[in-house]
Image 1 (cartoon, rainbow, N blue to C red):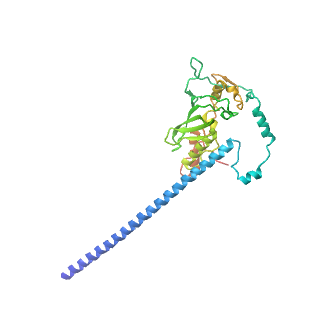
Image 2 (cartoon, rainbow, N blue to C red):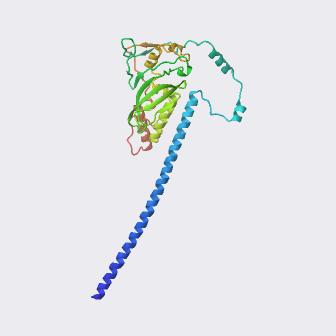
Image 3 (cartoon, helix red, strand yellow):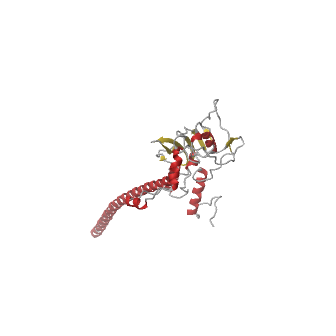
Length: 317
């Protein structure tokens, strides 16, 4: 009987020792996993920081390219030696431009002899438009003041009045599948026009020296938010701001002094109650609805076996 008790005691003691050894091994494994997890977290933070830096570099490159394109496709600055190598005599076109700049301002030309019809807008007793002006997906809050003595404040197709404010609905920068109100503004900075697009979120506004710069940066951020190229970054800044909307052009042409904008090509407008609304919103870069259509198509192409095929999906040949 005493021998049986001794054997049982020994087995119990050996079992407790093995459990202690297992517990020690588990503790060591936990410590190792904790250190490994901390190392992975540090590495992940470094990768995220690099991603943010690359996105900022890409945005700056896109902005520079759009600015160069808007200014006539000017290439990047050359080195001093390259400048001496490629330095040329002024061409005849440049001399003619200088001569024309010193001559008397020419009368604004007309884009087309064909009249364009626009819908009437509400006016007050003095004949001034009543704001805000609802143009469907575009709302004009202020026309601003036309600057006629500086050519930078107008182009052939649009006028850039200081104080101009418009809003439109587009995809959010945080989640492009959610609607967001964007405010487009034109101001003056150092004697030149400055353009800005601000959303009703806590994100910084997008600024640039042309509407195309702002619009291109906005579209790039939309793609970055989705990690997909759902929309082309080819800008349509004037359309996004509403500066080429027929009603806006008609109202700006009615402002005092607009005839002195020598670069702007005049358009013939006539007010008509039967005029059709503008139909230039079938673009994912301008319309929230078409942006959602593009998002759905891109997602379906990535996972056709999982997602339902969009009703308006067109297979590529």
